[in-house]
Amino acid sequence: MQFWIIQGLNSLSLGGLLFLLSSGFSLIFGLMRLANLTHGAFFMLGTYFGAISLRNYSGLNIWVAALGAGIAVAAIGGLFERLILTRLKTNPLGQVLVTLGMSFIISDACLMFWGGDSIPVPTPQSLQAPTRVFGFVFPTYRLVLVGCAIAAAIALYFLLERTRLGAMIRAGVDDRQMARAVGIPVSRLFTIVFCLGAGIAGAGGVLGGPILSAYPGLDGDMLPLALIVVILGGIGSLLGAFVGSFIIGFIYTFGSALFPELAYIILFLPMIFVIAFRPQGLFGRVGA
Amino acid sequence: MKWIAAALLAVALVLLPFFAGDFYVNLASQMLIAAIFALSLNLLVGYGGMTSLGHASYLGVAAYMSALLTSRYGWGHGASAVFSILGTTAMAGFFGVIALRATGLGFLMITLALSQVLWGLAYRMSGVTNGDNGIGGLTRPMPFGISLDSAAAFYWFALIVASFSFLMMTVFAASSFGSSLKGVRDQPRRMAALGFNPWMIRWITFVYAGFWGGVSGLLYVYYNKYIHPTSLSTTSSAEALLGVIAGGSGTAAGPAVGAALVLLLKNYVSAYLDRWNMLLGAVFVFIVLVMPTGIVPGLTKLLQRRPR
Image (cartoon, rainbow over all chains, first blue to last red; front, side, top):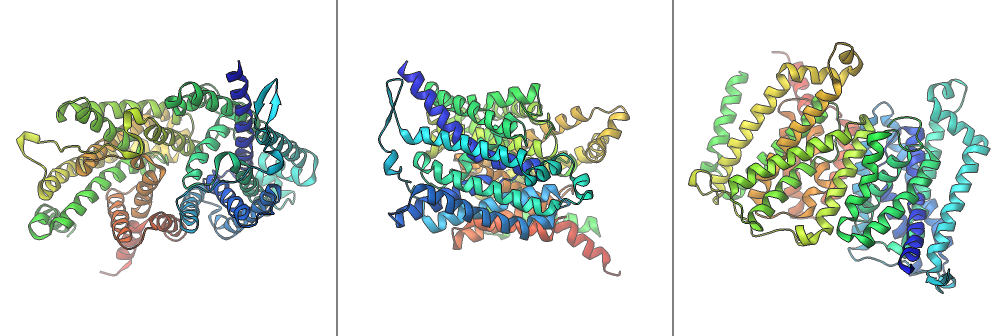
């Protein structure tokens, strides 16, 4: 019984982490029709920024670090979008290849600056004491992480559904040309959404740090998870990213606990299943 | 003129070991292997319009199967080669069914996810694959009792296989099936209206490309006598894709040239500094921004423009 509850809570926290990773990816894909393969590298960059700043400035709070890293990664993403991606507007394949090239550059730069050893991100002191859930002891930080993901999901929901910016983004997702025709600055929206997606990934990287820690290859570990989540949930759908994250969180956690060597295969079974029977994903409206 | 150049090139390739040192002969063998691999990817990317970011799966799986069968289960090289290629082709058939549910970016993402899964398996299933240590101490086969342990012997062996696969893939692309493949790439709806089955054409190409990817994987493991999970990684797929695009996707020889250039670059850069991945990324960005049609078509255009 203890096993199931503890692993269930672990699954929830992994799911929360995955949502912070994949919501930005899904958002960017939905609007820009761009598979942003730099996303794992953005996440890793965030983790490294968090790990380094928390190591060097001991008074720093992890929430401040997450905010700072999110803004820094968003700025890098914005530059990348403005300087390179806009030049390839008519060449979607070229865009993907450039994001892949960019991810190699970022991950190698991380290796160059911060070396090959993993750098831990300390759990904030106030959250180090474990919490009792149904009489079982569980790390408080992981529960807070789930809370962060839910807060991010609600914030994104309100941004997309209740604000003028969100309405413009939705219009751009549904019909880019019509949106342009009625005067929505789609090109500027692209930059905003790319910054936003990169920033969420960067901040998520810091928040995931206490669980994952910063290490070379983190980007390669996270990118396929993001891909699987959005393929499963439906590309461009916030709800899909949310549900997909928790499904994958559960499958991955229980898969690793019960069949450690096969966790990777179990992980991709639901993806095959969804692709076979519902290629647009669980909540997607358009096919990839 | 073109034929004389081709004949000269062929003679130079055959005679290479007589005037080049072992280092260069080995480098040439690696180039041939990379060329087969890139050409097989070119069938998908260039002729089929299916950009795969998971082609290393076929190279890696064939190499791992051959390594496991010969070293752990004591199979002979002949049987294990046949079984590895069959297994890899069957896997391509299965992956094709999954990945071809989507086209374009969806296809790319699915192939990437599938290859990452295999890479993760190679790393984590250390009971089978020996994990990060890789599988070493392998041997090269002895076709007709001829030892391939010298650099020159292996080079000629690789040259024979590479020539044959180049021929087979060129014939494939030039055949009427190849034409229908290009038709499906450019106008899938019209092709469907004409009575072709676009999905089946894509799937057959996918499997065929997987087959030749497996062949390059066998040569790869014979050459290195060692296999490590990195050969299944995205970097490995991306290197091949860069070779294809840099050389000119959809041309017969371009990808072979591109792959050889990428390999040369990698060898020379690795000798002086260890920032290969960063350079690979930068070259990727540069090629896509500046030379999107590739080096060989670019040069061809330059040569044609010159007055005769």
